[in-house]
Length: 463
Ligand code: GUN
Ligand code: ZN
Image (tube, rainbow, N blue to C red):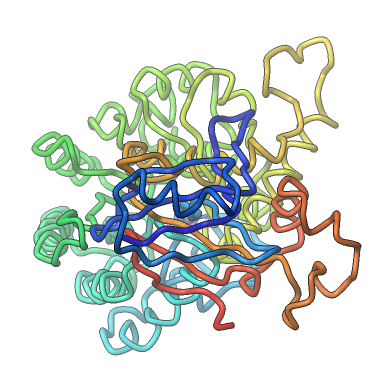
């Protein structure tokens, strides 16, 4: 048993988080949270441990300026695109895919390229504090197996899928036929399911069906993927939806029989409670209702939506509808693998919604309102867990959940009790609310001193 003693910040829901500067949080040998006690004093620690029958424990006392919070959940990213980050801001989606993205992803036809690129990609993602990550690989079976191996060996919780794409893609980067696409998808699922389970006997790496987007999948391929999904309701599905206006127009022209973009996925039985829909910038009211009805989740990717000039997703409206929403970095549409960046851009996106709001129509709790720190924290953690259908396991701290956590350290690198090199006085480093807010808006990897998944330390700044 390992027991952490110190400040804990725990998302509760969209408007609340619980913060306590003195908590004891006990993690058992399987990496699950056994119990938590809040608001205790130093002199009560030993007595509390004894009350819980803990004799042989490793007690980890946090220092001033440190706190524990749940790890970030990145509900949407592309592993083979990380080598491209920071480029392409002048493009919109469809040109960007053809000019920047497909040429890079095509390099992953060579497994040795994947073997040299993916360890750095996953290590970087972990050290930015992402404990659960939804990865798109390239279309290649071999290199996506390499990605799954790397994630597995580094101990991150993840969904890993290979892209399905058999049309409207360049000849050098397209699957041969629906049959080969399906065959490789099934092989990847079988392969990932053979990877060893984590300490609690539960696999940390799981397969996910990944039709890239409706444009790149033929009707026969979507039909086969729908059948595959129906054969196992526990299989997750990830795809893109309504990111860019030209994409929406093209999609509608390819599927004239469907009355919306979401209806395309629905007609192939690919819209359900474990479907993760990335972007959702330009949804129509009818399809918002359909997504809610199917209980699918939305990955809000604001960094990418700004970078690729896609637009501003009205997430407040989705939250008011009770749709599940999490955040995604969408590397390399997004220029950073850090969820801190996604959080900051989600904040800005919400402010733009406020600025553009037609006051006469602004009713609802979240629509056209600025997202609070509590809401931003929720979206990056518990909201993401809900989108991934993993709410019973991760996203917040509760007995029975897995200890997927970050130890955040807001002191500067010399260990001084000040923030990011500017001495702002003790009150700025002792108030937990302020520490969280400043970490979210000014922090980076250097402030994440440990990253835990299922109770195991898998990364963090080395100091
Ligand atoms: N739509 C289809 N493929 C992609 C992709 O790789 N990135 C983004 N942002 N949108 C997509
Ligand atoms: Zn994407």
